[in-house]
Image 1 (cartoon, helix red, strand yellow):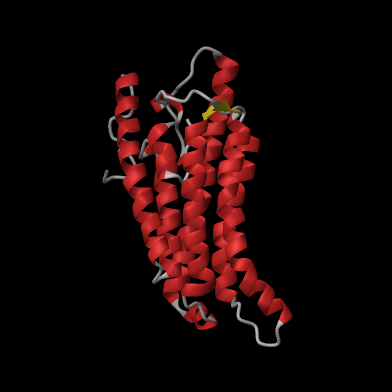
Image 2 (cartoon, helix red, strand yellow; image 1 turned 90 degrees about the vertical axis):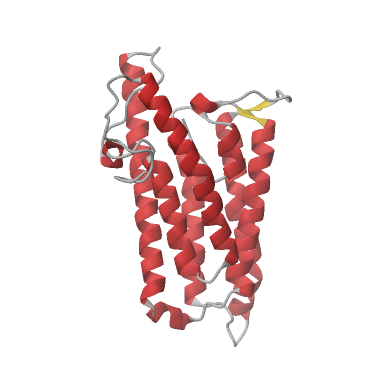
Length: 248
């Protein structure tokens, strides 16, 4: 099972919850994934290019180090998600064209609004680099980003081991890291990342909307995955929560 940052996409596709569509046009899974996720860094870069260019060619720079840090956070996440992740995945299921289009739409709008806020509408002077709140947000984002990749690694290894042992067995119980506490640590990590982003970007309406959309999508999906695991595996660890360790 894979996941993305697109609430629309995650609601209608992925692994054991994949549904049927009226339009049955399928794209190559890895290519579709790359194109839909690459929409985000591409549009984000397009929105920040004008002030960056102005700073590089003007005697009065308008682009700050704070904006550079925020932009690096966004691009680091999406370069990994759009390019490195599908390259590392052994295989990815074909993607319905409606899934692809809805994800491109969401990622494009999300990247444009967040990019415009960082580049134009928000206020991010370098004095923010002296504020603990800013660095707390960066640290929270970094922790979520690392945890996301760490649990991707666990799932990649599990899939490889599963294919070696039994080509017919599609699912098994993950172990290691936060999998010992929750069924969907990737969803928890993703939420942590964007909460950190919103704190670092404060006050940013687009960042807040993104956090709310992420949680509103991923938490119910984690609960559904959690129920599925418990039904599928009689020996599933009874103390595991769905997405937030020890709580939910």
